[in-house]
Amino acid sequence: MDRINCLRAGIESVALVEIAKAVGRSTLELIELLQLARYSHVGTVGRRARLTTEQSERVLAFLRLIEVVDHMVTAASDDKPFDAPRWLGDWIATPCPALGGQCPAAFTDTLEGYRVLDQLLSQMASGAYA
Figure 1 (cartoon, rainbow, N blue to C red):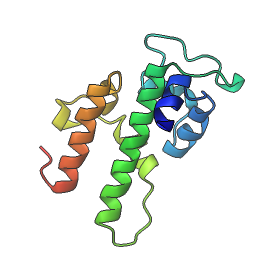
Figure 2 (cartoon, rainbow, N blue to C red):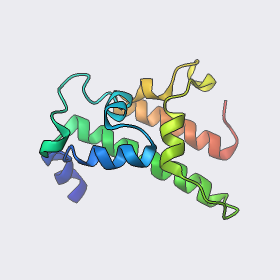
Figure 3 (spheres, helix red, strand yellow):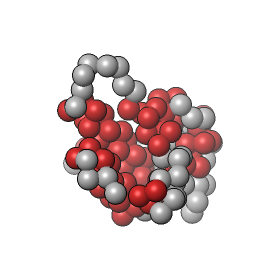
């Protein structure tokens, strides 16, 4: 229920600054990669504006992808340091053959697109990457 209430209230836009740092992108690059301003204005990040419920859901879906990558590497870990947020930040902006040459970021405009990305990461983890 806490997540649902948080989504309904909207994630504070200042959270995008920290997420952008973690993935090695500027805040504006992150907003573009996640297509947060596509249908509605994100607002001024520095003024503690809140994202819409739809935008908040997509930010949460992106954070889940970071968790998937982190779990994927941790499960197969040889204890080498790995920066899952940075890896995902690079991967999402790189054309992917399994997506018909499109960048994974092309799928961040819908929750179904995030499901496709989650499934692709799971296939990569299992060795069934196509």
